[in-house]
Length: 489
Length: 66
Image (cartoon, helix red, strand yellow):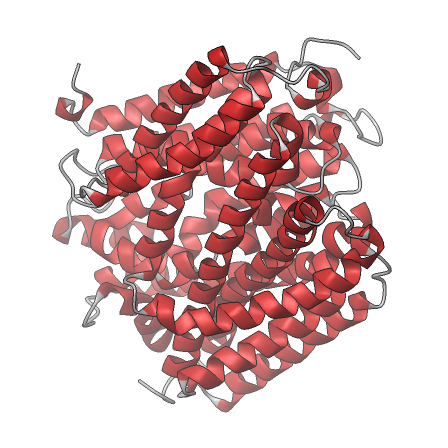
């Protein structure tokens, strides 16, 4: 397949895209005067930029590269990651958690955890999030390098260095504003590319009816939203309990990379509306990442393994020029994950770890430190990328790592936000023991969806129980740190 | 009760029920919190309405792919 996919027109479009993205990022860099500008875009983002940027951050390595392949294998059930596994949590994040974080006046979710519990919880939460983020950025870099190898024939290491350099340029210069703006542009390209595939795909397969008929005649379960309870990968009770109740709320209500653009909104309303707008876009994301997998199936694609479904569609369905645009959409999806990841991780290390561990840290140095850290994290992820690739499937790897700590994190967040009785000591011990419990449950071969649910239930119980025997901090401003919509003031 | 013994269609019913419940919760949130920080009180800025439309779309999707 090397070199066969792209026409001169495609290459021209790709080069133009890369120049525009870099130029926009560097231009916005001129507006960054301090850490507030760098990490929170000077609290200037509007709701539609926030919404598009959230989707850009969300659609990443585990979407374009893996979801089309998964859809090829399991059908529309893959869309659960975009529907039941996202929309309810996004609505709750928009209406409850984003207003709570705004009221607390924080830069990050670990900072909120630090205020609600103690500084140890803040550091542990920031540390776990940062380590996972470096791996996730490594995965995204690897996936991007693989894409460049498949389509352009570039060696993997060249792909990693070129991608790292471009993303690094605009992220280090422009901070969150550049990241959010380029993400928005990237999402528009993704939707244009995806909708063109839908249009051309349906016209080649006899319209919507012809498509559905061919699909279901050969794969009767591929238009069913859920898979049987004994399915190995995605049993429906696991999807509802693990994904719907734990992993998704933890990701959307406590994910720093996602929520950072909400905290950079110009008003609280923009922050909430941005997340709600993202939920609308999210509803249609299966058209971009699930449909190509189903289309490859309907068109009887002869591919060695499911992950080749999307490249096959691009090669066989799209005309020159448009395949270049789709290629850009894939690059854009991965780039937006990488840039958001390094910006948010840089914030966590600069403020949530450095400020707590080094009491004499000067906040005026945050901008300089943040930029250096962005570069260091990017280099670290570039080194980690080849190692991560050897650890198994991209999609499974990220989901597995997340399932270990998202249960405990969500338990801390929920009881911390909705009750006044949980204590700082209980928070710290629950976080540490919850991750340990999840690791043990995973080690005995339990499906990751059930691991997430079991560790969440354990953490709820542990947090409540330990709180009964430990002291609360009387100085905490719980009015500001807990959600109580019917209390005035 | 062992939910794994239920037919797959129940997963759709449970999802739709969950969305209905969420729809109720959304409308329990006071209006003053919804408009906090909004430049005006135009009705389109009431994001509870956005949430309701979203929820309706999800219910339709899970009814469709049953």
